[in-house]
Image (cartoon, rainbow, N blue to C red; front, side):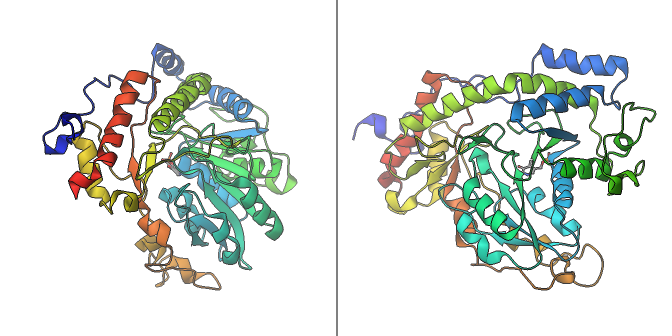
Length: 433
Ligand SMILES: *Cc1c(COP(=O)(O)O)cnc(C)c1O
């Protein structure tokens, strides 16, 4: 064994010697963003919505839906989407257990409950085969999450939903611009909702966006949280009322949900600039990440987190890019030891998946409505809570996934060294046992 393969953790040379520069930096903010934000500040137009409406129109045109509606954050976009899909007291939604909490907590806030489904170990997205048996008389919607930029199997999910008359909500917070069998993530289900906060692939400072082709869903979301867009004009916002459905028009002027969902226009201004550059930046991220994974093709213990080659599905954004770890191919090497060795080679890594939500006390025992009983069982007809061991992949996924550098620029020299670091550790795993 040559010195080159002596692991850095044992005093060998580091695989990564090159300066990463700003290759991981995100978001990319230029004077164009600054000027756009300043224009809003100088005009004192933070609480208006002229810039916001342009942002929404451009967003809808980019993603390919009839409507786009902006939010102060992704959590609120998901809340509105959940409500507009008819989820109410005593209802149920189906949602993957491994996701950020905001995919699931809105349902609980409506007095509904969440029947958590398993994820697949190869995609980290909801397992379409673990959905149908969870559907009950009160199930209203399936929430899917294009986790870590990986597009869900929407064909299978939509077929189940249509068979049972359920709505499908897509959480696109990790995967802006991903393709699900050729179609933009967020446009396949009844409604798409997503975060645009600064850590996410497409960012607008701190914001969210909801997209749909369904006029009724769009209008319900306006009525729910945009009180001034239901009337002719207010102090800050002029324009024609945006609701036409008589059952919603009655409520004009006061938001049905009691929420106020208007987005600060400094964020809309930044969002417009970010969106303009996003297709090109997303393409470059894709080129860089695919270059990285191509270099690790055939490496033991490591699998790319991306759709198979030749499929019409495509990663989008690659949020918090990750790889799949297969300890059994590395003599059972615990992932913690793998992390340490890779980090020593000069590549910070670690766990990259959320902890499973089905075991969290909020979904087991929290009493939101102060009734003296857990909200998850307070209103429904059945207890859908699940204990340890119920969703084995979701519970194990953190030992089956590791962070890889989330490259924003396609720089072959830097990317090659980073890929080599992972290959070096994997091919010399026996040194760590
Ligand atoms: C970030 C995120 C959200 C919430 O978005 P915010 O803008 O932070 O409110 C929702 N779902 C997923 C999967 C996320 O990663």
